[in-house]
Length: 290
Image: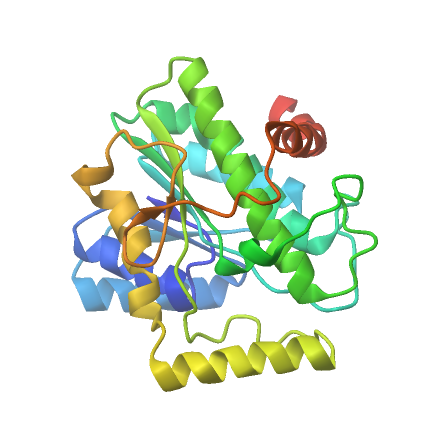
């Protein structure tokens, strides 16, 4: 089981819970020293010594491709990919080395590229599962389909909400493609962890109003116990390991493990296809590269 963004918060708890169930777990991180420390902590907490790490900067498609190459050299198949890594980024827009707006690169492109690159390994599993992360903020998203690189979106929080809506659309499209291709042993679903009281997003410089909204939301979460990291990880662990969701494909699950309907106000099949084609055009060179 490979879990991205697993050196902190929900990702770390997810990794530890799955390791406690006896699974072989590979955590992804950006910092090797920190990743090694988390691996050691998980081993000590669970008694499972079959825990390791891979390092990559998920803002870089080259780094993602390198991480997958390293995975392929070490492992002969993959049972579960949890695309947990994601972030609310600064209000000031920036583009990655690949020319992609940062939020789109990390929250949308990276999960899709990982899924596509690791699909051959997932197909070797009898029950391959891909789990993508969304957020309740997707319900507020109003994307301009002619501005998919978010050049005219000024707010970090707004870009985040749009990216999480796009995660859902890409998940649905990938699920349909797997079904159409007759690939029945790999599924892809969306996990929404709820508002978890982690340090997620607190180091970003999102501008006064974005930061105020975020801080109020976190304050409410801590006051009313909306979700601890442990509670936020529940659906991830469920989707990764429970027989009850074997074969379930293209669905959206909330933080109580319930299959629910995501927002549909902005949805249309044409928009989903437009997004998919845009994303695939960006990542295809890295899929085709030997």
